[in-house]
Length: 571
Ligand code: G3I
Ligand code: 9MR
Image (cartoon, rainbow, N blue to C red; front, side, top):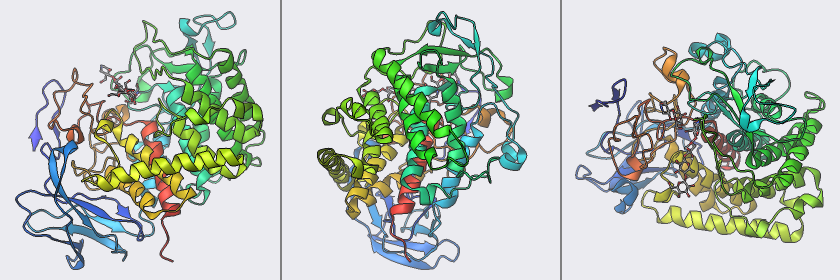
């Protein structure tokens, strides 16, 4: 259906302006031993209780099953029946078929079903690099000139002091563009880099082998660490060497126009030092110090440099425990403002404790009052639990027991939500929000942490459902990742995708997803469908439902590593 969005500059095709009426399934693929579900809209066209999984090229039936009961799923204001074909394990390319509806999108069952996607999701960070030309050899059709060298960045009045007065220049190159915009924000870089490093620390046998085809390949470091250090190096330059404080962001005063990076040349500033930035920085650097310590030969001295930076930033935060971000009147870009810093303190203290074993950091950690919530830029408590679970053997007996108990209780709650959801997902309706696709992935990451401590199969299956959800088992019937799946976002709010003259968007980016709050109302007309799980439009105007962001890709990368490592292998 073609809809004209008045007020936007172009027309778009939103594949499903009305709810999809065909079987909804992960459009990329399943590992043979994974649980496998499709959601079938239970409308009048559904003529039988039976479903089939057919070979996508021959149409030959590979599996026959009976649909589950019909339930109402409030977030989509629709009724569904679930089709469970977990027992089909034979590698192949398939579609789900029910009488009276079009066949589902095709998908793979294969030991390597996650591989190309995982590499694509990591490659997206290369496409987001600031300060580097993307050569055709690595970037193909998405080659572009370097943008934003950031070697001469102004110190904003909000960040000025005697040594670095307003208007003085510092150099702060490299890093990733945050999202659809070209700014660089420490808080969001923190959660992103932390999750990528955790993927490698927890599952090196998977994340360490991803090959994303980047210029550093062959230097002896896994690609994911080469990619992470592109951003870590930028983060290091955001530390004021005089006092250890961290600037909150590096930005121009207003969002750039819809142009390629090299054409966005307005002056950039470092803005206000904040406690949140110092703590997220300290956490990432302490975690990175542990991870790169294993690669001293390739990066001599890096690990200890990172630890020193972490300690200095933490010290600054202890001396300035409540400096919240206040957007200066002349700055209008992303805020990443957070009023509650308890979780940031906990994450930083956790990583510093695990890296140094210094009991002073353990004393700063109030574990009993730390909630186990999905990791997000605003709430990083989940990051602390993930690292504590990874290093549970190094903890005191009582801490270890608390970590196990907390994650187990949490997993029980999510698994219950999953089992009782008509759509077999953990996501409660309130989570349909800006970047909601990353919320369900965050829940899955906590499920994975619990599964690693106690292998209950339903915990793993509930986590798998989150992956399925973002890859196509959703009522929009689309994979939320550009370039991966049959129906994918074609018009993300992402300046390079909009300005590069290539029809396809830059691949490997997950969009934010359905968001009934529609904070982009001023730029976009109302979304085609109102129910929370359908409140989405595949249009470039929609930064509240269709932007891409580094912090949304990171949990996807982590979950792909985790499920690949933990799903039993057929061999
Ligand atoms: O924390 C409250 C929660 O208590 C409340 O229940 C809920 C109700 O909707 O709202 C929560 O706040 C939301 C907040 O994100 C935290 O999740 C706000 O409504 C929501 O507007 C806010 O959206 C953020 C958005 O910036 C606007 O500030 C997104 O999380 C964040 O991902 C997004 O980040 C932008 C950067 O600013 C600029 N670069 C692009 C990037 C991605 O869109
Ligand atoms: O492009 C910006 C995007 O990255 C942000 O998430 C969003 C909300 O802060 O803002 C976008 O920029 C828009 C601005 O807020 C209003 N004028 C139009 C800009 C581009 O569409």
